[in-house]
Length: 402
Image (cartoon, rainbow, N blue to C red; front, side, top):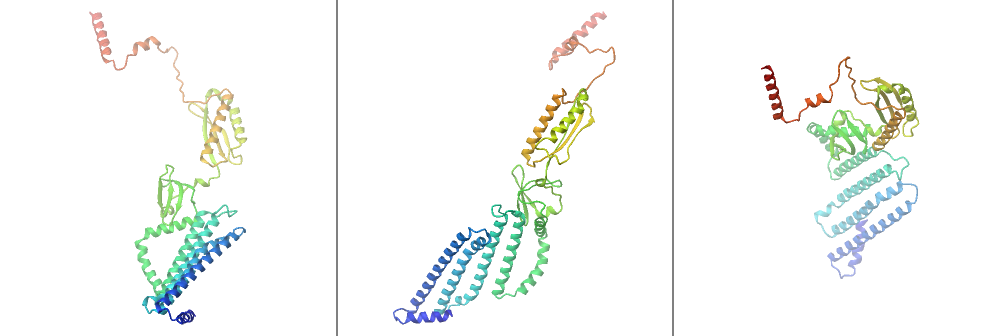
C-alpha cells in the first residue's frame, strides 16, 4: 500500500519534468517528516486536552492511562513516520541498511509498548500510595515490591520478544539460561540469598519504610529508609546510614517498636520507713490519679502497690501504659506523672527515701568531740610538720623517763 502511494506520488512529481530523482526523494521524505511532526503535535495536544477534561472526574485511572500513554503515543507516531521515510529512501536506493526497516519497526513497537506499560505501572503506584487520592492508601513497601515485580516481568518479556524478532530461538535461550543459571547460582549464592531475603521482607512485611526497627541479635537500630532487592538502608539515630544485607533478616530477630500500641511506665518509688503509716493512703491516691489521668490508657494493665521492704526504703510499684506511642510525647506524660506522684507523697507529710544507714552503739560508748577531732586532723601534704611533732613527742618521752 505504501509502495503504491509512493509510486503514484513519484509519478505525479515526475510529470513536471523539472526535478531529478534525488530531489523527488528529498521532497517526499520532507513531506513525510513534516506530516509526522504535525500528527505528533496534534496527538499530544489532544491527549493533554483529554487529561484536563478527565481530571475533573472522580475516576483516577483514566488520568493515569492518558498520562502514561501521551509520550509513548507521540513516540509511536514518530516511529511510523521514520519508518515510512526510510521506505521512501529504500524505494529510491538499494542500500543494505534500508532492508532492516521492518525489523527495526517491530523492535521499536515493542520498545514503545514497554515504555507505556512501565509508565502505567508507575502512575498506578503513585495512586495506590497517595492519601490524597485513596481513602485507604496501600502500604508503600507492598506496592513498591509489586511494581518492581511487574517491571521485571515486562522487561524480561520484552527482551525475549525482541530476541525472537531478531531471529534468535527463545527455546534455545531459555535452555542456555537453565544451564547457565546453575553456574551463576553457585557463583552468586550470596546475591541470590539477599534477593530472596528481600522477597521475604516484601512478603511477610515485618517492617516498612519509615518504621523504627532494632535487633536484639545485632547492633541494628534506626529508621528504615529504603528496602531494596539486595540491601535495606537504615538511618541510625545518630544520622548514620546503615546498609544491611537482606539475607541477615532471615536469621535474626527483628523488633518493630513503631507498631507498639502503647508505651509503658514502669517505676519503683521508695518512701522512708518513718512514713509507713501513710503508705496505704499514698498508694490509693496514686492509683486514683493514674486512673483519671487523660494520657494514661485505663483499659491497659495498671498496677500501683506496696512492693517490698527495701534496705532503706518502702518501695511502691507503679506500672501503667500511656495512650501515645510518640517518643517525645511519652516522656512529657511520664514527667507529669512523676511530678504528680511527688506531690502526693509530699501532701501526706512523707518524703522520698534515699540510701541511709543507722548505727547502733552499746551503752557507755561516746563519740569523740571536736577537740579530739581537731587534734587528730593535720593539714594534708604537710609531712615535715608531722615529722617534727613526732620527734618532739619522742624527746618528751625520753626526758620523762630520765
